[in-house]
Amino acid sequence: MTSRKKGIERALWSIAIPGFGQLLNGKYIKGLVLITLEFFVNVNANLNTVIISSFYGNTLKAIREADYQWLMFYPCLYMFAIWDTYTDGSDIKEELSSSVPFALGAYFGTIGVIYSKTFSIGGILLGPIWLSIICIFIGLIIGYIAKLLYFK
Image 1 (cartoon, rainbow, N blue to C red):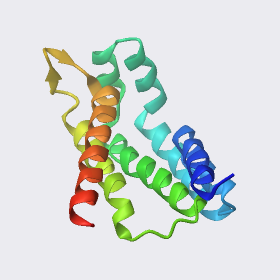
Image 2 (tube, rainbow, N blue to C red; image 1 turned 180 degrees about the vertical axis):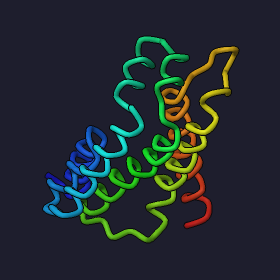
Image 3 (tube, one colour; image 1 turned 45 degrees about the vertical axis):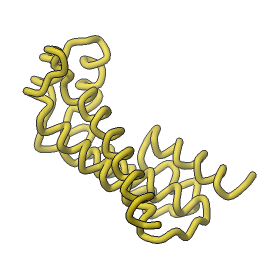
Image 4 (tube, rainbow, N blue to C red; image 1 turned 135 degrees about the vertical axis):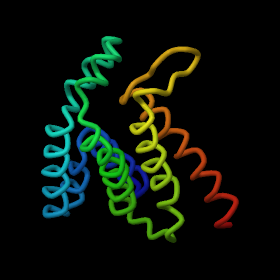
């Protein structure tokens, strides 16, 4: 398996649970720290309950269940774990520019959390899960474009 494919495979494990990719990369302490942080933030933010309510379309319930003070940490933790796993697992020693899409994804995801109580699209309130996911993808796209334009 090529180095890049190995990095992608391990990044997918970090998408499942932050820290799993680091364990696969042999970074046991970092992996265990990320798993512990993920669990701690997840429990304190009521994230699993919020995800379930969101997937059932109960947006107002999801908003009431979310602890926003904790939930705001999750996009940064999540995106860092994915970026770190990919760059470490693929043995790609890129410039700092490789982090730009992930950093902007984390930033925009956090902005999505902040505005998820009030921001709607077409009159539909998306809530903390769906708006954050959309914002993460917007941040990734903007970050990738910025990386291509600025770090040629």
